Image (cartoon, rainbow, N blue to C red):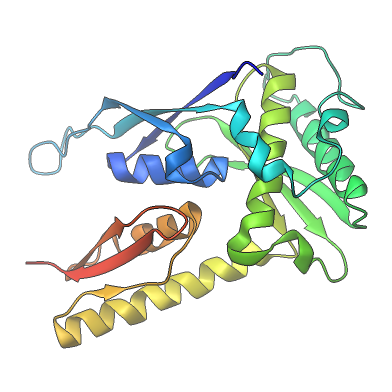
Length: 249
C-alpha cells in the first residue's frame, strides 16, 4: 500500500511545546512523526518583539494500522456513510461538527458501544485563528473507550482526525472527550505537577513522573512553564517517555 503523507503546522512558545501540541492533537507517539522546524522563535529584547516557534509535523496514513486494530471493519469505515464532496470551511459552516459527530457515532456503532455524541467548536490552543472541534461522548460505563494510558481514546481520536481531514480537504483538529475524562485527568495532572514541583523545591532533587502520552506530558509542561523555581523536560522514548521536573539553576 502506498503511504500517503499528511502535514500539520503548529505554533507555540517553544519548539518542544509545539511538537507536544501536535502529538496531542494527533494522538501519536513521537516516533510516528517527522518534525521540521520552520521557525525556532525568539524571546525578543526585554520581553518585547518575540516570535513563537513554528514546526511542521509529517506523518503517514499507514501509521493508522496499529491503532485501527482497536476498531473493526476499517475499510468500511473509510468509505461508508461519509460524504465524498470537498469543501472549504467558512464562518458559520457547521459541516465539521456534523461530520465529526457522524464519524464518531459510526465508529462507536461498529464497536457496539451505545453513547450520545455531540460536537462543538472551541478556540484553538496553537495560537492561530483556526478552530478545534470538540466531540463529547456521554453514556453508561464507557471506560472501554479510554483504555490503558488513554490508548483507545487516542486511537479513536486519530482515526476521526484522518477521516474528517480527508473529507473536508483540510486539517481541522478534532478532540474527543468521554464522560469528561480529559477534563478530570487534566485537573489531576495539574495538581500532581504542582505537588511534585514543591518536592523538587524542598529536596533540591529532580522528580521523574510516570510515563505519559504526549497530550498529558504537554499539560505538565504548560502548568509549570512559568514556575519561578522549576523547569520541565521530556526524556525517554514512547511509549515510556516521561516528564522530569528539575530545579532551575
